[in-house]
Amino acid sequence: LCCARRTVMAAAAEQAAEEGGVELNPIHQSEGYDEVPLDEEEKREASRSDGYGVVVEVEEQPEAKEEEEWVEAAIEELGYGMYQKRLMVLSAALWAADSMEVSLLSFLYQCVGASWGLNAIQAATLVSVVFAGELVGALVAGPMGDACGRKPASIAAAALVAVAGLATAAAPNLWIFVFLRALVGVGVGALAVPFDLMAEFLPASTRGEKLTLLEFAWAGGAVYATAASYATQRWSWRALVVACGLPFVVVLAGVLMCLDESPRWLAAHGRTDEAKAVLATVARVNGEPRRDDDAVVVEARQRVETLVDHVNDMRRQIARLAAPDLRARTGLVWIVWLGFGLNFYGVSLLVTRLFGRDPDKDFECKFRYGFIFAITTAQFAGTAALLALIDRLGRVRSQTLPYFITAAALLPLALLDARPGLPHLACLYLALGAQMMASSASWVHVPELYPTDVRSTAHSLALTVSRLSAFTASYLVDSSLHILPVVLVLAAASLAAAAAAARLPET
Image 1 (cartoon, rainbow, N blue to C red):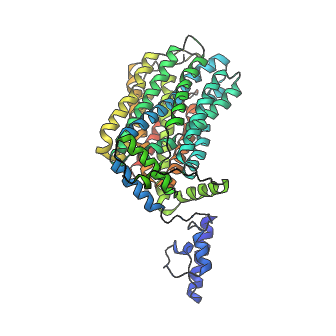
Image 2: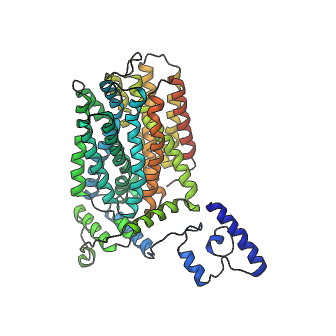
Image 3: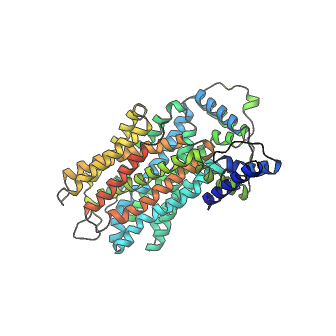
């Protein structure tokens, strides 16, 4: 409808201009017409339009861009010090705890299915409902992070995962279990916001390296979940849920005590005094001398915004991603993240399918832990490779090459013997390691592709897209399908991600 309206209006305006010399407004100018002076009514309309004929309430902040550039320069000057190291530890703990909650799904599928006598669809729902929750969480948290701040969105995400994760251990039946795991998914889906918060405290010169280091924490969380499954196998699945949920409680305490708001976000929203106060804290913790204390260290003032203001901000941010300068980029990012979501979780589930259940039984809470441990360590290898290569190859090639390798490693699985062994281990190790390298590079790349005012929205929408494909992973991998169509779908998704990533701009 928007396109049709714009086309009709442009044609009418052109005809009117030819017949009577009518001046064109910005909606028509976006179609390539010459700029001409506007009358007062058209100026008022233009100030409320996003360029596509959609009226959006936008608060004028003429100095926001200038203030944001000042914050960028300040962060570069402060460098990477004790404050950033402290934040890195907190972010790594958050990332590892997130990984635990996601990685234990492979084990819960088998163990809860065996304990409650579930059928295949019910058991697959135990996994997929988490990704459905992540979809909702990412849709809400991204605009919330851009409109209300990175800190409140991060606290809400950590609190939801901690509370719902532990409560799952007490679930008396399937439907309460599903509801609680969906809430966990909502919280996990919001964790793109604290990742962006960490990125906004880092100087550009070290951002890629430091964000890549966080992926070691993700790999560590996956190994922890496997170890917890092994350690709690003599008890029920409830002990495994507690073992993977308790670390998030510790992380939540750290988030509440140590997390500051992003100075870039504060500056972009005209809250200069608060941005200066946060930067003064960074300087103090880093041991840098403070200058102009009276001007820099000020009492942070709180600005209470109404719900209508927040909704208008969210509408503006989402509409901004459809603007001509970001539309194609956003489409390519979504293709990459569709492939990433299906492959990362699909390969993880494929590991426990091949080295878990007895082919003659529907569900069995027994696993070949030696093989699973060995394959899981591939995430460390993939992260280490990315750390060494991301600044040499660049963000784009650090995605395209490993996405292609993932596809190449998966295809031989369709030709191997039905009894899993060392050849299966080698293929899955290479596929998971390459997927870890590629997806980690995608996480680093996306925040650098978008400006501050829409960064969290763009990142969270990409995460939402990845959860759409991850939602289908359980129904695809943990199904009665032969391994051939499963690996063909995963390989095709990885190749599509490689092709889309190759067309993204380098940063």
